[in-house]
Length: 592
Image (tube, rainbow, N blue to C red; front, side, top):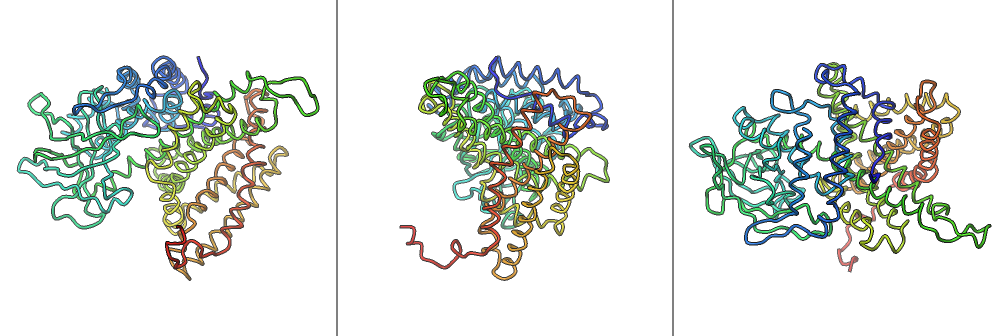
């Protein structure tokens, strides 16, 4: 079958670099071992090959549409997502008691990357259901669990995350959807939500919305937001009743044309019931569990889409005969022989594989923060909090650039729909918008995560990096790279010191003005650290990797340090000095 992602690389980062096999020693995951997980990965790959990849371009060409109150999607989509559900992956992280399969998050995310690479438009129907079901499992009462989980795990019912409103996008404190208590313990819901992914379609029996709303009389701002289960059809007396959830239409999108985004109206006829999840006014804290998973998931989706595009461009570069070497005129060669084509291929490869490492590490941190040794859980949680905006935004932003290079490798052919690259490019563009824009994650990193617990998260990460640098300095193969990363890390410290001076002297507006660039810089340094850890493992005496694998990874890492990490120098130079060009009191007319 078509190669879309390198499972050897997935296994290398999981088991060799980050020693994920030790996760099976924890009580929570004792029923698994590497052999059983390998079988699971193979079954997941089979689903990707047989059910998902064959309909990827068809979902784009025969796009979802709205007619007479019904949202129609490609019929084969239902069969494909049901195949995903039958693997158990929708309930992967939930307990056996709740009907899940109690799989480690690091294993779940690796499996999902295989599915995303096969079809980045169909798989999110399953993963969105997974995320919303996880919220019910974590915070819902037994009645909600009994009513919804089994049906969602089997994908009999679709799950969604209903946050965004016409006047409340990223600013969730402005949510106005209202919940009024009813005598039976439920709530009357009234309001509307927009851009709701998988918000409606005709391939599932019911749609279960995990919805944020404000109970009448609740405090203003984020403190007064509660979380509700609001199904399209509410279960009553062993049957489904209309719950006054109306789809007013779906959005026409640049990409992801088979993955619906709905505009929903709740309670237009005053007959929409919602069921409170957990305690009142704690909805945003609950939703952030799902959002943090979704942010890592968006990074995974971005990496996997870029991986699929990379292997398409690699195949083309090997087969396309054009041009000759400057010193061998007249002899045509495959374009992979040309230096700049190799640059574009290595740029993609360095991003994809470095991101696999970053995603593997963050996923393992989530497992250890919840189920690892109790004395270490807080530190693992802090590291995960620090790196979540990085894994989401670095992968989303660089993933788009990676697919853009894949198109460039194909030249004019890449711009046509004879090849799937143009679809990958359209489909992946939204990932830097999903689950918080890059700007928001930059402000989150600089304004909150770096300073949380008096800088403890950053100190923990710096300790991890320092240990890696010390090991790398002992190996001839990694010494020069370790020295280069050390120089750039000192530059990052200079950047932070400058920004904290700005915060003291000029205030938060000036402090956060370049937060996106700080995030970009931190992402580069983090992935360089990932590559350094990988090289240490490859060149250690106990490495079992083949010479070909070692050469491939070493060359790719060298490319990253030579061509990508050097970009940090310019960022450090810019961010180490203060400028008011973005924050000065100037009239908006300058943009005219």
